[in-house]
Structures are given as C-alpha cells and as structure tokens.
Amino acid sequence: MVKLLKVHGSENKFFILDQTLLETPLTDSELKSVAINFCSNILEGADGLLVIDTSENCLGKMRVINADGSEAKMCGNGLRTVSRYLSEKYQLDEFQVETMEANLDVAKATDFYPGVPAFSVEISPISFKQTDLPFSYQHETEMIGQRVPEFLPDQTFTAIAVPNPHLISFVPEVSQLELGDLGQRLNGQNEYFPEGVNVSFSQILDTNKLFVQTYERGVGFTNACGTGMSATSLAFALLHSDKFDSEQDISIFNPGGMVKTHVTLSAVKENSQLRLIGNATFTHELEINEHDLHDNNLTNINITNTDEEADYQKFVKSIAQ
Ligand SMILES: N[C@H](CCC[C@H](N)C(=O)O)C(=O)O
Image 1 (spheres, rainbow, N blue to C red):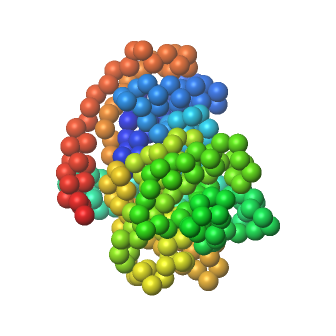
Image 2: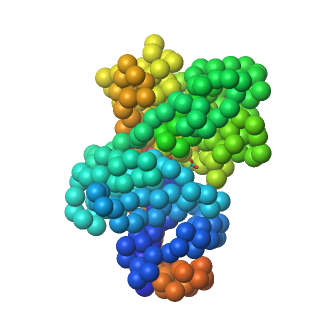
C-alpha cells in the first residue's frame, strides 16, 4: 500500500506523493493522469500534485503538476508542505529541497497558531527577463510598472519569474471579474504569454500589508499562490518603497488566510532574496494499492482525516482584518 497526503498552504490545496516509497516510480504520463484525476475527483479536488523524488544533493526533490496536468517549475505554498513532510520523515528542521531550477533553503518556523505548523522557504531564482518569463510585448525586454492597455486600460503591470511566470498589478480594489478575464485570456492562445502566466492583483492595505488574489496558470482561481505572493512582494518593494519597511516581514492576506514574506532588495534586483513563511497543514492521509496508482484507478482509497483543519480555521478567525 502507498500513503499519500492531502495538504494545504493558505488553503492552496495539494496531494503529496512520495515516489521514493514506491516499488516502481510512476512514469511522467502516469503522473499527469493521476494528478488530473486526484485534483478533479478526490476529496473535492485540489490545485495540484506535489511529487517527491530522491535528490543527489538535497533531502528530497519536489516536482509540481498543476490540476490540468501541466508541470510547473516551482510552487511556494506546496514547498512549505513538502518541507514539513521531509522534516518529519527525516527529523530535521533545516535543509534544502531540490526544485527544477534551484536547491532551495527551507526551515521549520514558529507555529502560526496552536496546531498550525509553519515553514519558511526560499523563493529563487528571480528573473525579469522577457526571455525567462517568457513574454512578448512591443520590444520590451522587461515589464516593470508598465502600462499595458491591451491587458487593462488603467493599470500597470510587472512580470517576474520566480522561476515560474507571474504578472502582477496593484489595484485600488481586486475585481475578480477583471482578474478572471485577464487570467483566462493570458492562459489561452495569446500573443503575450505563449506559455501562460499566473496573474495576481494586489491591494495595498497598509505599510507591509497586502491583499493578493491569483488566477493561476494550469488551475484557475486558487485561495492563495505562494510564488504569486512572493513575486508580488518583490514588485511591492521595488515600486511602492513608501509603503515598504525592509526591516519587517510583509503580511499578505489572501482568500485562504495569510502568509508572510521577507524581501531583501539588492542593487541588482535579480539578486534580491525572497522568503515565504506560512502554514503547512496536512488535512488527510490516504492509502492506495500501488498497482491502482499506476493504473490511475482511484476507486479504492482509504482516507483518514487528520483534524488539523479545525486549528487552521481558528488561525483564520484570529487574523480577521
Ligand atoms: N500554477 C503555477 C504552479 C503552482 C504555483 C502556486 N500554487 C504556488 O503556491 O506557488 C504555475 O503553473 O506556475
């Protein structure tokens, strides 16, 4: 039998599959089918499948499969849950996790609330280059606080890869209608982001206090997007220095709760450092026969509730703005 977990970071929900426990790891096409099936049909679905494999230089390797089966370079909320899983598996509080483009530092952080474990994860590498996102707009090589009437008439936009692609706009108030419309346009056939992009709108609530909502590539609206909130924090530090205190964490409220980020700006903006700190909640333990997993037959799964969600909801009540 194989154990999986259902987890979330700020209610951005995932299944975790530790491939190192399998007799035979799933092939990439099996992973894609299983990710789509789990995310559509099991426990009211999820936003993605986080796959743990062995790593040569780190405690483990994380791969990210979106709900639509597409693979992403990185997942901030997911990395916190994978970090907790590896921390408990190997009894370590500080280590590195291998991701597609970087070995990232992760560490156990102070619980966000009694019964709400938290982890701090590095978000890296950072790029603003048109070729790294990728995007194409006129002859721009970067998009930072740029007017793009073709997206929306009265807003400015910033494109950052961390390293998955993000498009950020600061707005007086988040319009889900406009965010959803732009998110769908830029993740369908379009001339601007040929590989799609995670689109985040952010409202600046106060000094080092933001609200962020994201329409995610490969998923759609999610309750929170860790790399989205991290990229938004960097854009915020660069473009709204009057509201940015570099000594303090930034509190980022989102539809799923709240996380913190820390931005350390560098004169070379790509060398800035980003940390994402937030909950790593395990809501369910699942058990399935390995053959069924390979066959994408999810009809016989034993599911146990961990009861952690109740504590997370107490945390959410405690931060009500
Ligand atoms: N949808 C994203 C991957 C998941 C990122 C998000 N869930 C996070 O927490 O960073 C993409 O295709 O780039």
